[in-house]
Length: 93
Image (cartoon, rainbow, N blue to C red):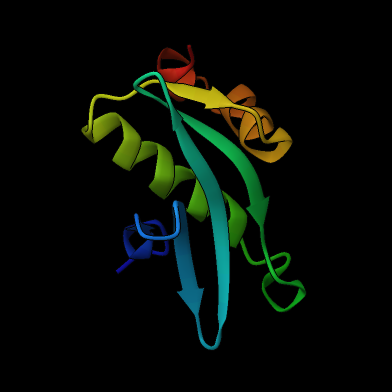
């Protein structure tokens, strides 16, 4: 299973998560008028440079697309990811 396939939506904590070994990366979100605002991305130092952040962004955006939602990319990491991957531009409000 690829990293992005391991991304899960933890609705109780309003965040997408990707756990590898004992570390968890996350993208925090909140719902705003039927849109999902991605507000913060956090990748532990132990996961840096392994593509975890990109896998997390892709997994979250794929799930958002599957749910038919639009994105407010308030987090600079997510905004940069979408800019580098124009296939997700249609999700942006």
